[in-house]
Image 1 (cartoon, rainbow, N blue to C red):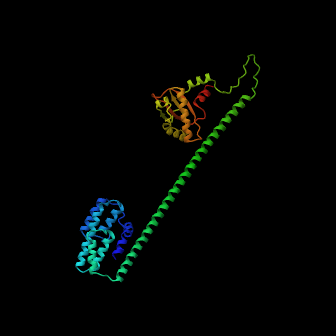
Image 2: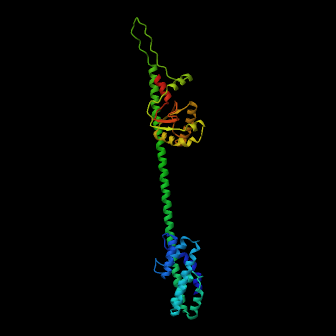
Image 3: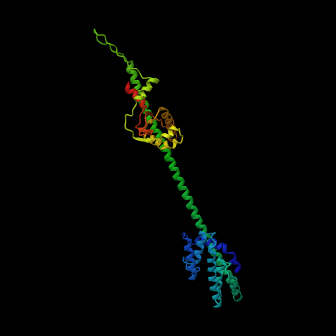
Length: 354
């Protein structure tokens, strides 16, 4: 009988730990509870309030904390004392039950072997009773194993269900992102198509007006100078462009204004990309054009290159519409966002001058 209970401790502890107190508790509170249960002789009963359950809970939470070992031996000594009292009262089966509990949990408890030898010298349980006890223990272990297997299966099913739900959420998010991107691209395509149609219609109207025949004026003694068709503005010469740049000015209130660190521009700091990222996102979100205020055109050209690269990363289909305004705003370079327009502020000024 003793050999059987020397083999079972590891199996017993492995399965019993799965049904110990599930909620995590403070380890110091568990130790205090174990001591109180031992003093009150609540060694393995009643269920839910005994020292053995708390010991198993402690081991489950801190399997490598060996400070619990002295308390385990105190628990074993309490059972050995009960067994010795039962032997003295000739209640041998009860004494055997007490000692079997200790063999299963704390086989190195001081006094355990001596108590077992004392019991063995006066008590010889029948072979049938021993076999029945063995069979009962085997059946109990089998039930524990089945319950543990069911619990593992339930946990695995929950894990798979959670993974599947997360996968579905990721697929929905990916699908929504693709739909949003396609919608923005289609909106931009439609906007550009409408702009191209409008531009073509204007060009056609201008061409028709230029080619229309001029009706002769009535005879008169006063010489009439024939009307001259309005010339179509071609590429602006360098000198004319310089004059136009000096005349440009913002003709609408900005919808947003973003100051830029002048030092980053002067040093041509490529780290400015991080500063420009939220500005680029705002430009795309509002389909905005920009007016850039810098100290000089060199700074303006460098900054617009950085803006263009940033916008390509934000939306590869977006076309930046930008203009230059010389001079800082309150001592800082500034990027002002304006409502969308089809041509730059410079071209608008050229058209107005015409």
